[in-house]
Length: 557
Image (cartoon, rainbow, N blue to C red; front, side, top):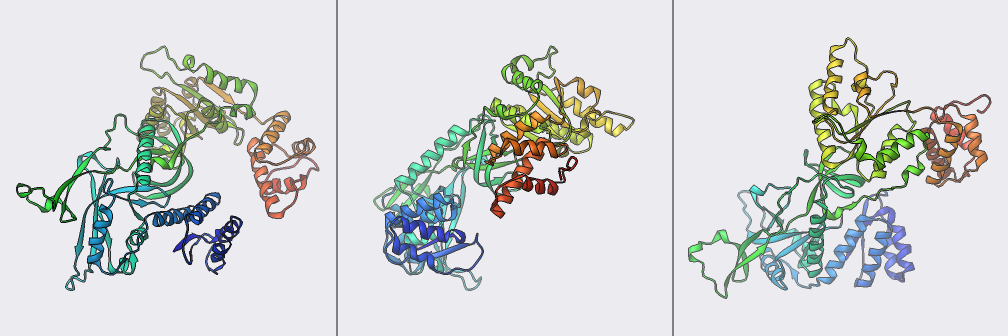
C-alpha cells in the first residue's frame, strides 16, 4: 500500500515514526524523491500495514498539520477496516461484485467520498449499470454508479441531484473492490461513517440558525457568484443564511432490487410490479450535504462551507486593555459598550437609531484599530468596507451602500467604512461630488447600528456629515508615554524581549513614530533575527527604520 505526503515532511515522518518504535517502516522515507518542497510525493509500504502504524501516521500528520498526509492515512485506515481480497479483472464482474459488496451489511445504501479537507460526504447509490464499448463512436466500456444527494446549494423546486461515478477497465483491473473505490476517494458505508454524518447534520442545524454569528473557516469554499473554489485558512466568516430556510434532511427515494441488482424504478412498469424474493422495492433516505451559506469578511463574497469546516470565533474581550489611546477616546468606547441602549435611540420616528463615529487623523494612529477593538469587546463581527468598493456614481453608491447596510443590520455587525474621504468631503461647486455626498447621507441616516468612518482629511469633512455623527474622534501623534506603552504591549505580543532602555532610546531617536510604525518595526526585526540568528538590539531597529523610510532626530542615525 502507498501513502502520499508533502515532500517537505518526509524527513519528519521518518524521525517521528522511528521515535514511536516503527524503525523498519520509517525507512521507506529514505526513498529519494525529486520535486519542490510542497509537491505531493508517493511512498510505498512493503508488507502488512497494521492499525497501530496507521494510528501513528495519523498522529504525525496532525502534529505536522499535513492535510495531504492525514487524508491518505484516513484512506489507509478505511481500507484496512474494510478488508477485501477478491481481485477484479473485468467490468461485468466488477458491476456484479460491487452490488453484492454494497448490499452486504447494508445501512443506508450510501457510499462516502473523502474530500481534500478530510471530510466524508455521503451519496445514495441508486443504480449500477454496465455499458459495453461502442467502436463506432469510440466509447469505451464502462460501469456507471448512479447516485442521489441533496444540498442547500440546490433549489428545493428541483429536488435532489442525480449524478454518477464512472469506472473504466484501467480503473479496476487487478485491484480489490475497496481499493478500486478508494482510488476515487470512495468508501463503503460503516457505522462510524454514519455517526460522522449524523454529527455533521447536528452541527448544520446548530450553526445555520445563528445568522450573523462569526466563525473561522478552514477548507474549500465555493463562491456563490462565480462557482469557483478557494482554499481558505483561518478566514473570518459570518453566517448569512435566510431565516426559516426549509431543510431536506428526510427526503427519500425508492429503488428496486431485482435478482440482487439495484435498479431505478423508472425501468419498470408500476402496474406490473409484484414484490417477491427476487424483486423488492427499497425506500432510501437521500443524504443531505450540510453546506452553510457564509459571507467572507476578507473577500466580500458569499460562499458555501461544510458545517464541519467552520468553528465558532473566539472573541478577545479584554483587548481594550491593550489599546493605547487617550483616556477620552477609551471612555467613549466604554460608553458604547456599556450604554449602547441609550446611545442607539432617536427622538424622530423612522430616523436612524444608529450611532455614527467619525475618526479623523493621519495614517497609522489607530483609527481602524479602535473599531476592531470595539467589535471584539461587544463580541460582534467587524464588517470592514473600503470606500473604494462603493463606486463613484451616486446611483452606484446608493445601491451598493444599501446592500452593505442591510447586511450589517441583518448580522448586527459593527460597520467600518475605511478611508471614506470621497464620500464625506466638504461639498463645493462640483455638482457630481455634491450628489455623491447627498446619496451617502440619505443612506446612513436610516442605518440602525454602529458605524465607524475613518478619514485622513480631518479638516475637510462636510458639515452635514459631521452633524450626524454621535462622536468625532481626533487622532494625534502619540506622546512619549503612549509610545512606551505601545512598544511594551506589541513587543509582548510578538514575543520580543526589549529593555526599557532600548524602548526609550528608540522613542528618543525616531521622529514622528506612530503605532503602525512600531508594529512594522517589530515584525521586520523578528524576521531579521530569524534570518541572521542574532539578538535584537538598537542597531537592528535602526536598519529596519531606515528600510521603512523613518526619519531620525539629530544624530540618532
